[in-house]
Length: 434
Image 1 (cartoon, rainbow, N blue to C red):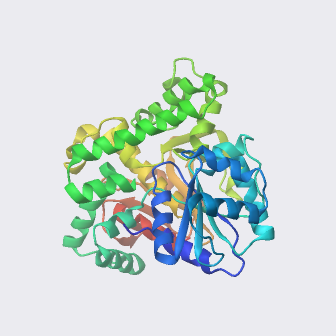
Image 2 (cartoon, helix red, strand yellow; image 1 turned 180 degrees about the vertical axis):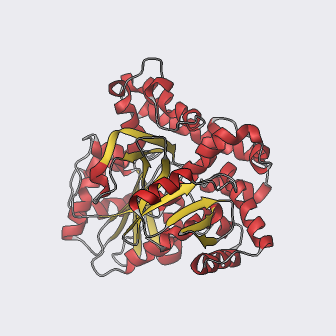
Image 3 (cartoon, rainbow, N blue to C red; image 1 turned 45 degrees about the vertical axis):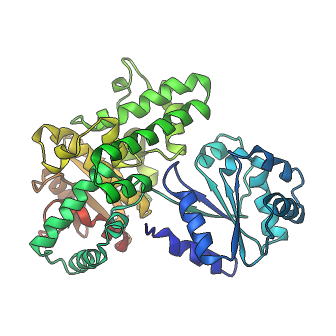
């Protein structure tokens, strides 16, 4: 399946000042697959090292001299390693701190070697002091679950993507037949999500039950990580916080509430668990912004946030939501669907490196997202249907007079009353307005 990060990897390979690359991302987002596929297409050969599965590899990094490491890896893997034509892959590098440290010496003493390091829990290891990090000696990339554009690409809908982009640019409605087709794909995506194995399963068999099995396997792998790479005292807390995310999105007030995790729960009790989930990449916080001033991050409220899963398909799986409830617009799902759609939009923005907040007034007005797009601070309202009543958005616009506002819903493209209408299937176009 096509991943847009592939071109970034090609650019890295061809860059004049190339450094060892660290590709970060949560487990199961496709890091190993895309790097091995890239190696097969762009290099004469590759050497794959998984430090979690092969404990013997760690012995080769007691001496951090690049020539020594290359010699031992070449002998162990029975492959000759060339500077320009071999890709060296260090998978699950957080399991071998010395291998991470070696990247510094490869950059300084042997920059001709092409090295990509992968880590599912690298952010956790680095931020909690388990690993010494080669600051300034490596380049970073992040891989997330497949975004909705990649989901369309997996369904061979390249031309539909072009039509969507054209309508977005010109603020003209998409022909109804294509609008309905795109909405059907979007609803599928809410259930399937963007985990590559899950998308592939649905693309091959269109069997929701097999999709759910794959999703449950991923959720179980996340649960295992919570037990394996965590303090003993934090394991149960981390698990119940993660389990509560979907149910909290079903509430009218979607602000994360500790008492919904546990009666009498407090921030001090669960802050380490929340940090673990964020650093592992399987959940993210959306903070409330207290003032519309620059820099936005300086005005966030650290105590008020919403919590989202890294993939909407896993969010559905965590609550055992049926695909027909989504495709058939079951009204009993409306409360949860509102939170699920916010989760979807937030995930897409994160992939495009848009960093949003949410805003509330002193009364009851709330705008789902506020973000900088092309230098402008833009309010973004999200609706799960075609219902476009905008009391909160109007309150914000009357107070702050933004250049324009975005309303994301099932409604077609358009521009009216200084509000740009963006269909839910076209959120990937937002990366063109940053």
